[in-house]
Image (cartoon, rainbow, N blue to C red; front, side):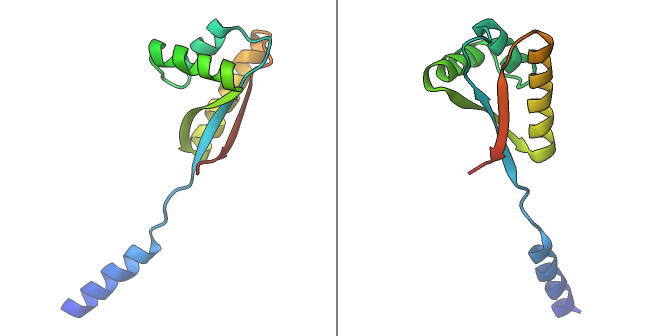
Length: 101
């Protein structure tokens, strides 16, 4: 009986897979206001005001940055929500998702 339980535990361990994570990338553009980007980072990506400002400045200087890392469904949902909010406010803000490395 002891050996059978050990065998079952080994088989169970082999079946567990790690969930793939995805980065949500926020891209710089010449039209979306800095204040709007900070608001998106705070409201959708749950950044503190200080972190949102620092990330916005990084995006402005380098062209893009990771806004957050999530499982695929959440990453796509956050990117879609931010994109819709941007369009509703007349901004071309672009967010993409890519596999986390």
